[in-house]
Amino acid sequence: MDWVNAIIQGILIGGLYALFAAGLSLIFGVMRLVNIAHGDLIVATAYLAWVIIKATGVHPLVSLIFVLPIAAFIGYWLQIGIFNRVLGKDILPPLLVSFGLSVIIQNGLLATFTVDSHKLNAGVFETSSFEILPGISIGYFPLLMFFTAIAVIIALQYMFYHTSLGRAFRATSDDTEVALLMGLDNRKVYAWAMAICLAVVALAGVFLAIRSNFDPFMGPGRLIFGFEAVIIGGLGNLWGTLIGGVILGVAQGLGAELDPGWQVLAGHLAFLLVLAIRPRGLFPRIAG
Amino acid sequence: MSEPLLTIEHLEAAYGDARALHGLDFSLNAGETLALIGANGAGKSTLLKSICGLVSNKSGRILFKGKDIAGLPANEIVKQGIALVPEGRRLFPSLSVEENLILGGKVKRSGHWSLDTIYSLFPILKEKRHAPSTSLSGGQQQMVAIGRALMSNPDLLLLDELSLGLAPIIIKDIYELLPKITGNGVTAILVEQDVTRALHSASHFICLQEGHISLSGDPKLHTRDAITRAYFGT
Image (cartoon, rainbow over all chains, first blue to last red):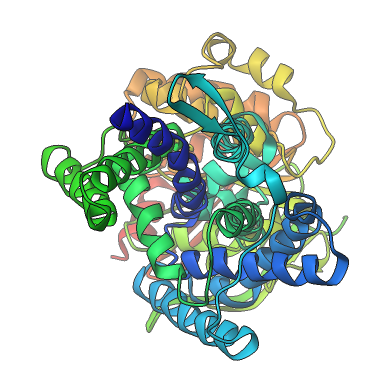
């Protein structure tokens, strides 16, 4: 029963990893930017929620009403102010800038909030669960994370393929120059993509902070999980990203079941295994 | 006589250190069709790209409806009423035929052209409207590229190498439709390798040679020999 339990919990945590990954995938798809600061942005939004909760006393999930739009706003101007200035034919400058941003965010958080770890307190909701089989219970919170991830992916898919904003994303990604000829300002298109990415990041950040302690240096680890979920699922495929997250979560769960020290390692091994067998991921998008 | 639709004054353009246009001057009246001819590298595409804002490294003035647009970015110029059908069609592969057309109409200028009128001009596109744009034949893709440009209801339509990579029969079809397009009051600049076809469809021509205008005027008033000499620079 322990093993079944490990798999089920792994699947649910996969939802969180998919949330880490969805924003990365969106940004890479629209502007070919590999955002090294993605994990640090997740942690930064967790701190943002912490500050808002401290000031207002609202429940962490209620704090999302503030955190999501603030994060999206920051994302929009982060793109206009920084990334748009370095995006071009060469993919190296934006990569380096995002690396620098990562260092700045980590040290900014350290200077402001110290190295002490924090946690968002969601009350009894964090630990309450229901039993589906004797010996196997499912927590309401992990279940919420998982279904939120599915909802986010459905929403992103819909946005991408059925709205004019999604059309602008795809067109700009296909051919920036011709998109300009259609009257699309690529800098604004990118800014909207980053705004949406940061909203998803904020969701992931708040969930992460409810689930466990967080400190200023947690970002790179979350970035790796996000990357691994994207690569396992196949670049440019949002549903693949969810499956990538689930595979990573299950591998970590099974690893922890063998030996608690193997949790993270097992996830990396699963990732390497998929890379060895299917270098382009399990469900790569066929390049147009 | 009314003011020309487009007036180009001392236009120079360069890619890095390589100058492609050396001070061009010409003007174009509303309703005219101008054929732009010249050998490879003469600067035809550079001229079109300069007009629609894709070449930023340029000097001189580009007056469109009396306003200097030389400093505007491409996404603003299309709003003024200039649309380009790019060389090689360059449809958006992730978008369906209809999505390509809808995006062309994004600037929402009013006028004759809409999805309905494009579909009546090119009925085959209505049939294939949900197909990915890359699944179409070359000729059909060119129709989408033309339709996409028309969707912005331009006053000035720039057509770059319409016949490139297409079968002769299809080129003939497309050129037979041209009067229907320009007949709606659209002014056009036509860049074409096929000089005979270009001169036949145009009321005026400009022959470029290494970034200079080597000959221009009414095609009927120049002998074929004179045009050939201007083309090759002999």
